[in-house]
Length: 477
Image (cartoon, rainbow, N blue to C red; front, side, top):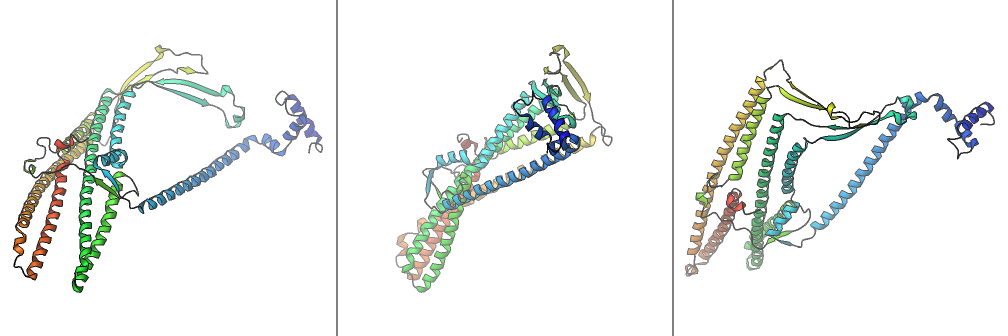
C-alpha cells in the first residue's frame, strides 16, 4: 500500500521521523505501515464521530460480560445446592441414634440455632448503632479526585486535568436530636435483650417438649412390641382386630419418628442428621406444690412479659414527645472547613478560616401549618396502642387463670386414677369369671393409659408456667 501511494508514504514517513524520540525501538518502516492503515486514518479524520459508537460498543460488551458471569455463578450455585441435597439424602438414610445430654444440647443451640443466634446478633447491632452515634461526633477525613476534560480530549489527559484534595468534615448535630437518638438506641438495646431472652426460653422449652415427646414415643414402641407378641395368643377374630390396631400403631410410630427427627434438626440447625436422643438428667419441673401461689407480675413471676409491656409504653411516650418537638423550628449547625490539601492550590490549611453557621428551619405545610393534625394523629395512635396493650394484659390474666384451673383439674384427675388403680388388687380377681376378668383387665389398661396421658398433659401445662418463672431462669444462662 505504501509503494502504490507515494504521497501517503512521504507524509507519514516525515511525521514518523519527527517523532523518532517516542518510537526509538521501532523501525521507521513499521511506523509508516501502521500509520498508513485505513483504521488509523479513518479514526484520525473522524475522531469526534467515532467516540460515541466506541463507548456504546464498550457498554454493550460489558453487558454481555455481566450476563455471562451471572449465568456462570448461578450454575455454580446450582451445582453446590445439588451436592448439599445429595449429602442430606444420604444422611437421612442413616438411622444410627445420636445420644446427647441436656447440657450438650444447650451448647449446640447456642452454636447453631438460627433463632437464638439472630436475636443475639440483634443485640450486637443495637449496641453497634449506639457506638456509631458517639463516633458520629468524630471528624471525618475524605479524599476527592476530579478529572475534567471534554470528550474530544480524553486521549490528551495529563496531570493538569486531574484535581485531588483531602478534606475534613466535623459533624455538629442538633443537641436535642442527638440526645433523642441516644435515648432511642438505648431503648432498642433493651428491647433486643428482652426479645432475645424470650426467644431463648422458647427454644429451651421446645427442646424440653421434644424430650417429653421422645418419652411418649418410647412408650408407644413398648406398647407396639407387647401387642406384637400377643398376636400369636389370640383366636382368629381377635387376631384380625388386634392386627389392625398394630398396623395403625406402627404407622403412628413411624410418623412420630420422622416428626421428632425433623424438630430436633430444626432446633439444632443440623439438616439431615440424627435421629437425636436426649439422655441423662434434664431440668426438674414441678409446680404441683406452688401453682396456687403463682401470680403474674408478683415476686418477679412474669417479669419478662411485664418489662416488654413497660418498654412498649415508653416507646409510645417517645413517639408522642418527638411529634411535639417537631412542631418547633429545628436548629441547624454547619461547620465549614477548608481543604486540608489540594494539588492545584498553594494555600495551606488555616484554622482561622473555619466558620460555624447556625440557624433554625421550619417546613410549613399550608394544609396543617401548626402540625395540629399530625400531633392529633400521633396521640390517637398512642391511645390505640395503649388500649391494645390493656386488652393484651387482660387476655393474659384470663389465660393464666384458666391455666391454673386446668392444672388443678389435671392434678385431681391424676390423684383419682392413682387411687382407683391402688384399689385394683390381685385379690379382687378371685372368683372372677372369664368375662369379668376381661372387663377388669380392659379397665386396668384404660386407667393406665389415661394416667399416662394425664401425666404428659401435666408436663405440658408446667412448661407454660416455666416460661415466666424468673426464679428459675435467673440461674439458667
